[in-house]
Length: 598
Image (cartoon, rainbow, N blue to C red; front, side):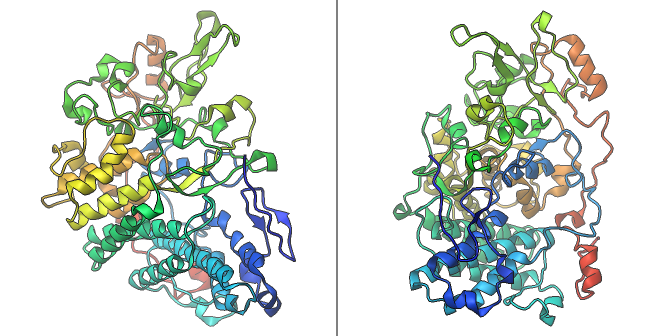
């Protein structure tokens, strides 16, 4: 059963679409002394609750009409190919006049709170907990701005919107990142350890610090900027702190190796889940459901062939490009067999006898006499069902690899919009293990013992029989993607990147990873966007011809989603690692300098 918070402010008792967050007067408008001089513990917490929906995004705002940002952020990458070309992935995003990400409401609200909360008569414990959340939100919002824009103005006050300092120029990334770390360290100092999965805690602050510092450490390392090692060490230590026994985290394993990974992402309540550090709640009973269950099967996106090929062979522990026991000519079902089991728990298997077929099939019989109809996904809606011939399509995909991660059978069975009730893991222990491994490898301090506690724990969860070692087999494909990784442990770093891509697929991390590793040119300009091989065992000759004519196939029969109707040519350049400063903002404040290339 969902839990709810019932905190009432003197000025507000209106529930914000559920998710335990109540709507209040925006924090940056609370400048009067009365609030601060009368605010008790509940009032301070209520102020903090205003900012949860802005940063604890999860599957998106309640009652949205897409799959949420965990999917849509991946549209910009080589993980998921949407129905139409993504401008960011092709380096074709145009200069913007406005950009919602250049918004300072959260920063103003955090600064207002930090400047005034000590005036409150609330308990010292209540003040510390609330202040810790605001330092957390300030650090996270600033980090998001640095990721998008690079240099940004740093503000430590926010009560007076007429303050001339609000119209200063951009501060250096060096200064801003230093202050971000100071703020997240303050959050770690003030926040209590986790008691509720949907509330910001010391644990979440440690995870955020590790995430932030890994990003910054690798951003600097792969651009030759001073300070990379310092940030990598901070990431390594923060992740290591969360791995200590007193925090009691472990990987979720309910359902066994062939179901536990899938089960992790379709839970209605994460209370007691040993892997979840921070989550966002959804509850359609109070008008705050999400839409994933309805949009996933027919949104037209799909896993890319490039991502598909990164799941290792479970017979040899090697990539399928060099293992010698996987050939696409053998067909979809044989090629997907004997792979890392996270694959069949991430995409649907077009086999009525598989427990992983999900929305590809429907029961056209009765409860007592099951008659499953369906099959491989419709490619971008260009194929047609024919009931007389027993041909049914119940889903659409751009690539033939229909994604099932985050898909709830129970929610889908309702067949209504905005009834998704599964909560969303925003921070989890699996990410912490990957940060520890990557930061350690980049620093050159990773050992086999640490690999066994991190990457190999993730492999053990799904019963993968081969552990990653300190000297893995060289994979030419990974070298092509990440040519700027050098040194004696280059293959190890690349394999940890593979593990991160597989484990965190469809959780919204891939774009930031490509940006920080500085491999946009290699990933976006020099690799084909392909989908699945159109297996004659799954599609008729006429259907394969239709897709070839209307969508496009390569010379080997792999789906090329943008071959026929694609308009963009790959043009990802150095400027695309950062977005432009909105032109309207520069018009208002000429001291803001534009990013290079824009």
